[in-house]
Amino acid sequence: MSSLGAAGVAAETMQQLERPGRAPRRQRITTGQWLLPLYVVLAFVFLLTPIVNVILFSFNDSRKNNAQWQGWTLDHWFDVCTVQNGAVCGAFGTSVAIGLTATVIATVLGTLMAIALGRYRFRGRTPVNLLLFLPMASPEVVLGVGLAAEFLSVRFQFGFWTIVIAHVLFCISFVVTTVKARVAALDPALEEAGRDLYGSSAQVFFRITLPLLTPGIVAAALLSFSLSFDDFITTRFNAGAVTTFPLWIYTVKSVPAEANVVATFVFALAIIAVVVVQVVNARRRKRLGRAA
Amino acid sequence: MAFAAFGASAGATTGRGAAREPAPLKRSAIAIGLLAPGIVYLLLFFVTPFVSMVITSLNQPGASGGKGDYVLGFQWQNYVDALTQYGPQFLRSFGYSLTATVLTLLIGFPVAYFIGVTARKWPLVQSLTLCLVIAPFFISFLLRTLAWQHILASNGPIVELLQTVGLFDATDRITGTDFAVIFGITYNYLPFMILPLYASLERLDLRLLEAGSDLYAHPTARFFRITLPITMPGVVSGTLLTFIPAAGDYINSDPNYLGSPKTAMVGNVIQAQFLNAENYPLASAVSVALMVIILIVVAVYIRFAGTEELV
Image (tube, rainbow over all chains, first blue to last red; front, side, top):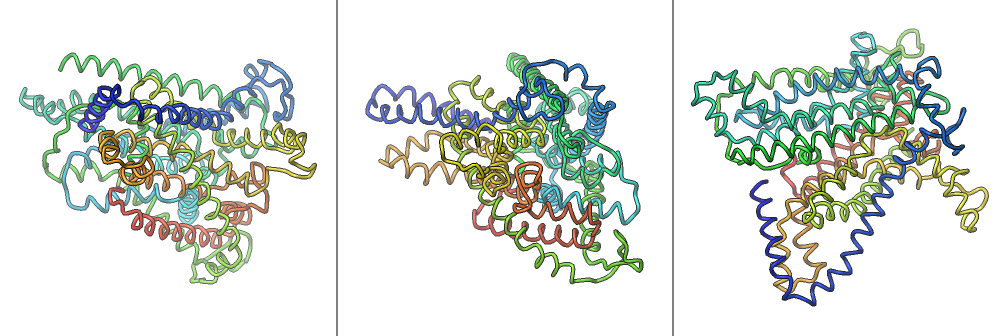
């Protein structure tokens, strides 16, 4: 990707150099210059309208029905853990616990697979890739019914662990893809240097390979957590009596504003996490760039 | 490549760079050791469940004949029932998801082009727009769909506006129609289309377009003969990432969200049969049929689109 990126930069520079001599063509681009951004802005309005709506309605002064705007209040932000005997907070806590457990398992399993697929040549790559592709090519409802059918047939109690198992299943493939890209971008010379300096395999792995893969692993973990936290369909079939946040939203008669409070809170945290990851990576790149 | 789709979203935050050398050949014993836990997991919780679902789909009612009581059998009738009773739901599932896939492609391609090509000059704009594309992932899918339900409901702002203008009668509504369900699916899967398209467009070498115009190619010709063929892997990943989950989705078509009983999709049938009626064999037969149809559609599509770098 880096060589192609360089080509892109080169192309850009060339374009800039050529511009003055091509007045007529530039004018034609001008029409497109406002048309495309306008289209993009409209698309973003479409994409973000419900998000703004969800955030706004967490401040809605509503009692039962949170569909109509009634005025501003901060009440729901304070009673989020007391309404409905703490059902909102309870469901949120369950979702976080399931999300963290599933993320850890999926990230470990997926990272190991990604290293194997990105680093080693072995027979049977194709079946392994197929095995990883198929869960992504299955609609969630099919994954959910399949697992539920299995748990029913072996009489396994539905609950926390059945949900975790289901979530790990659809997270693994995403972790493998994300981390594999990072493994492929690793410079083998760095590991060789470590071995040349008499580092043991474990030392090389933990002090060179793993730190270099960390940004990919962190991204994969964030992705897994958000997939798990927001999952409804597979969870619905494997939850038994456990109520996660999405399940609670689905089953509650009319969704109170406290649901919006929780969603807004999670959204804010996620945005902060993304920004932090970006900044840390930018710094890392700078530092590594200087070192090189 | 289908995965690379999502990898791209993460890749955007992880940054790119680092030298790329061909990975050295190494002993496969270590590789097998690294793969084993994941493979065991997938065998236990993906392959076995699938087999289990196929077995369940052939079960017959048990001796008691009670709810949820089924025993091993070879009841082909379940599949006949699944396809004859739920024909309309199958048609709707595929009709809705195909329409929504085309719509997300039409909406998503210019957006991805803007982020991946136009915004190359401004890295800040690029990362900001990319962040906005993934923003919906961070807020509950159900609440976002519910937000559209509130906006499009009969007492919501849009319908009221259309009624004041005179385009809508008092009885006309948006929610509960085919339109609303397709609208919701299009909305919910738009980021899944934009991200892989972006990953492809981001790597588009602009010199190729220059060469095209040097050879007096019309912009339309440049698009269809250069840009589109090169970004085809992104188009294929995006359409698959949209079409497959959309076909199995049943939240948008749920009567409490954007649908009505008249918009029921296969997912609604599976949920009702499995969880409410506890008719496990029928629900499993419907699921297996859905899966088989999707796999056939995907296989034909991949062959037709001519991309081999899927995995």
